Amino acid sequence: MDNPNIVVIGATGTVGTIFLDLLEKRNFPIGNIKVCASTKSVGKKIRFNGLDLLVEEVKDDIFDDADFAFVSASTEVSRNIVPIAANHGAIVIDDSSAFRMQKNVPLVIPEVNANDLKNHENIVAIPNCSTTQMVMALYPLHVKNPIKRVVADTYQSVSGTGGNAMKELQQQTDQINNGLSTSPDVYPHEIGYNVIPHIEGFLEDGYTKEERKMVEETQKIMHADNLAVSATCVRVPVFVSHSESLHIEFSQSMEVDTVKELLSNFPGVSVIDNPEQNLYPLARNSAGSDEVYVGRIRKDISTPNGIAMWVVSDNLRKGAATNAIQIAEEILAQNLLHTWLNMINLSNYSYFNKE
Image (tube, rainbow, N blue to C red; front, top):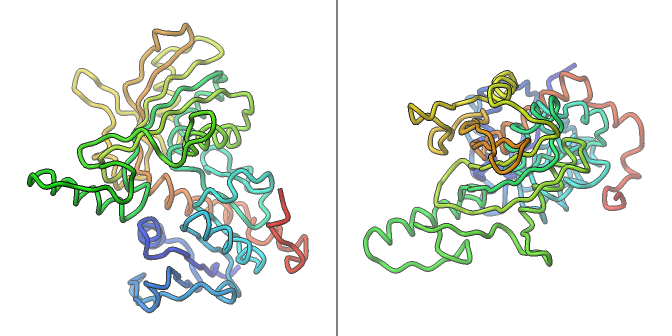
């Protein structure tokens, strides 16, 4: 088979930039590649594999002959673009929340549920970045000892919001350091030297949309509808990498050494846990890495079958760009590139009509 043709939507954004860099570094097989972004970036050039790629406008025909379309855009943009790309025959790997909970769309972390890719209908969704790192830590333990309940507190970097949030954090930090007043723009409150217990809009039950994502996405990925999850998602003044405090209740008691062994042997997870040497995962140290780091592993003394731990990961890489490329690599490895395309006439099919 010829190398796949690729379209990257959002190529100049925070995730898109890292995605292109990883495509090159991982030697992903590429036939032809096209890069697209918002109108303000159209006409710019992006250096890739020794070539200058011209940033193009997103039009329907951009997906002609595309095998993969990687989309890193807002949920609203994805709702418009993704069905068009899918109906052109491309397998769309989407970073937004637009299609994650659709029944016919696999929500995939390759180390956890790569088999779900067999059911793809030209759209595959990437989980929320906080969900991804949590599930990477939960899944190998759940296989050994089914999890009944998880309480998660997240400490999420501003890069999860995008480049403007990173600029605002830097600006506010500089202003405060120089005794100047600040005013929030990206967030409802100042993020410089502050902690905001509010990510996305609030729902009627008092949880936020981000917190609800962590519940529903975890259940879907792990095929565990009865798994109880409660999350509190907090924005912190960190540029890159999310951190999470997890309190996990298992069906049976589990020893700390067993937890460490299972996590250490799971692909994509690294255990850093030596409190005597002050060694544990740190957001600053995990930035730029594809691994999910786990530490502070200990018994949860509030429940007989409980374990507490600290989980850190680069939200732009494993939480987004790396996971997208791994999904594409897995699709190629399983020879799933055009399996669904051969089953139906895409021109008569619309995702807007699917539940």
